Length: 227
Image (cartoon, rainbow, N blue to C red; front, side):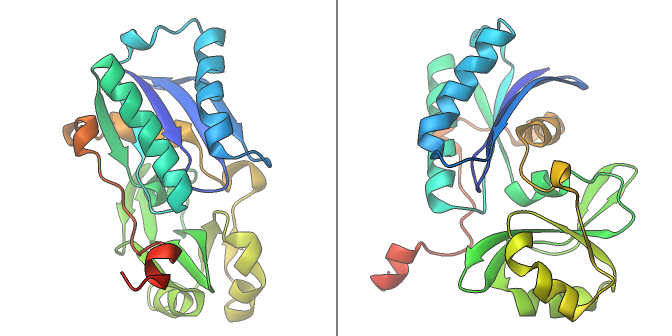
C-alpha cells in the first residue's frame, strides 16, 4: 500500500511517501517560509527523487487537525486537490495522534501539545500498547494549567512533545519535575507518522469533498466578530 502523507498543521511542513512497512521518502521543513510556499515544492521534490508517478498511489493521507488555521487549510486544500485530480481516496489522520506516534513504545503517558496562543494548547493524552496508540482523553483546546491539573489525575510522570514545549516547558516542570520531553529528533510533526497511521485507517478513507478538519475552536477572526 503506497501512501502520500502530508502535515502542515503546525510550525513544521512535512510530506512523505510510505509503502507497507517502509518510509520511502520524507521531506520536513521547519524554517521561515510559509507552508503555501513549501508544501507543493516538497511533494514535487519527493516525486522527482524517487521517480514517483502519483497515479500509482493507493491513498493520500493528511493531518486533519487541530492546529494552525492557515496551516490546516493549506494542507487540506493541497490534499483535496490531489485527491480530486488523481481520483484517489483521502485518509484524515488527527494531528495529535500522528504527533504522539513519534513515541510508539513509550512507557509514559504521551502528551503532544501544540501552542494555541493565549496560554492555551491543543492536546490529548495517549498511551501505547505493543506499539499501538490508545487515547486516554478527548482532544482539547485548553489552558495549560487546566491540562496539567487533568493530567495529574492520570499520572505524575508524562512525556511531552510538540511546538508547545518551548513555550510551556518551564511551567510544566514547575508543576511537576517528573515530567520529561521528547528529543529534538522526535518532538515535531512528521508526515511519515501520518502515513503509517493512515495505513491502519483505510476504513476511514473519504472523498475530497467529505474531508473534514478538526478545529476545536473558532479562529481569532471569528471570535473577534462574535461568530
